[in-house]
Image (tube, rainbow, N blue to C red; front, side, top):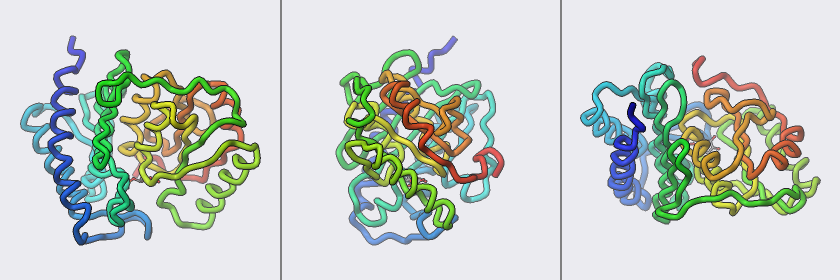
Length: 276
Ligand code: IPD
């Protein structure tokens, strides 16, 4: 039975090659279009990178399936089956990319029987390749990753996102979450503009907890495995089992920290990714 290492090796090399497409476009004028909200953007580079990735993977693994952010935006059905499936976010941090704010990542997760076998988050501008394979640990370039040993919530650094939703309920829910957490108190709350890069900060130990409501499966599938393989815990924001389609995620250095923070986080209603 395959351990999918050949797919991981292929994915790592492909993602590294594709970085040039992102970096060369980063400083140039972009053709920006809106998707679901004024903060949900797409550029021709998002679309181009996704096409390049899918076409190369399909040539090498013709039986495999795909869930790609821009293919779904273009009307493709989002369905995770038991078949080997590549889950792709060509540019996580598109708003950053549009502004030339240098935090953007190419994200690729690979699931079989609906279980993530490996995840790749390539932070292009600083050449940081985060990856993990199920049961085999998480790495940043060649260095093994380990979450922080922090148990004291008062000393935690948190990362979150305001997200792309711009209706009153979503905004008031997210800002009141931040207010409640700052009053705990915690050391600080950061928002980086890339869900995947934010989650990877927990995997490195630079942050202790990440949470987000309203993102999509392609934003978090790869990074969730990276956090777990670095020794962290990944759950729903309510503390229940992580479901990549639910549009809610909490990633923490330990269950002690997760259990203390989860009751303080409220979620606004979001349509599940697999019910679009
Ligand atoms: C977005 C980013 C952002 C998060 C949004 C995501 P995209 O992904 O991860 O940080 O707040 O919820 O949709 O659109 O740049 O791939």
